Length: 452
Image (tube, rainbow, N blue to C red; front, side, top):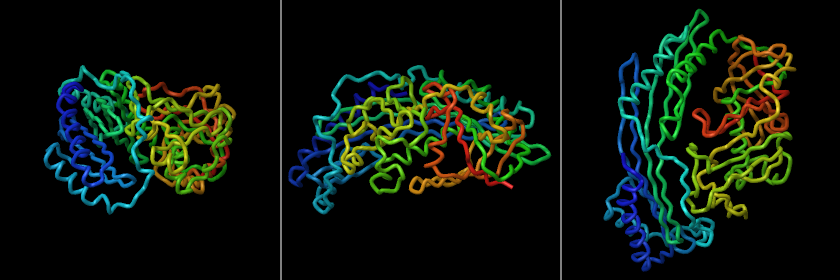
């Protein structure tokens, strides 16, 4: 394992040498600014089947990204090498052709006065007490054992556990000087269940910055098996308009469409129905979507984005009102807005909980569907069209039944669906071992179910 201190001791002088070369050698070619990005990644993955290791993948990789600026002209090169001379040669070749690149002032680096230069905050993203390889393998074996112990589970398609260690640093002529080191653990099980009705496949996963935060293997394996079992005997529900209720995972998938609709690319191209809606009611009252980059041990936490702008907590939707778009530096300039510190996208998103329990949210539903997941489909944020195949359980007389349903399509328009959303009070805490976006049990009234 390479520590942050060891990475910086080697790579900081290396990156600074490249930056110095770019600025000095570049003078003759009109280079006015430069940015150097260096990353190192060490990854180990083990897969098991029938209690034996069936695959091991490991390797360490380096990536160097260099961006050269000549006024409003920009050229970027990326190399998977830390051979300094090769990188300098590549820079020189790009310096010679940068005058041919079309000018675009929006692609300039962040203004130096806006670059974050404060003290680094410890978000505890690096596990300094990592498990041994034997412990990782045993974790995967325990997941498989727990999955196979569930009645109705016939086999596992795959069970794997991965450890990755990532370091990066950025230095630039605008004063940007940031670095971070983080670990990530991820485990997943894909399980096959079968009965007289046929066969179903499902699974479960877990992820965490620290191995000690991972889901217990016996719980992860059991949940994977139970998910597959719950899909057995699925029938096609009747076609009609009815309420749907999304579990936490399905709700996470649904709310991700909000980011598609408020994303800078779609806004700049005019391909989202939420363009020009800042300050307007775009979702039902009571719906608040916040994003906090400073969650300790958070999956997507960061103090500063890679453009150099400080990342602060943001509320994108407040009580249904659109408060901010999700934009990077380039998009902020294209749209005439200030950057928001999300060069790398949203961080730790949370749908704030409602007042009702999940049971209370469902209690008045005479007939509906409790959705446990989606299988692909189409979500078009330009027209608002939502058409996704789903699976889950029937809701009858305010209760979730044991009757599995699958193969149906949930249709509607996001413009209407957003205004008909209601949420329960069970938003998972962050960081979560299951969810990048913490979403509560969610109800949407009046959806069209295309079934039999």
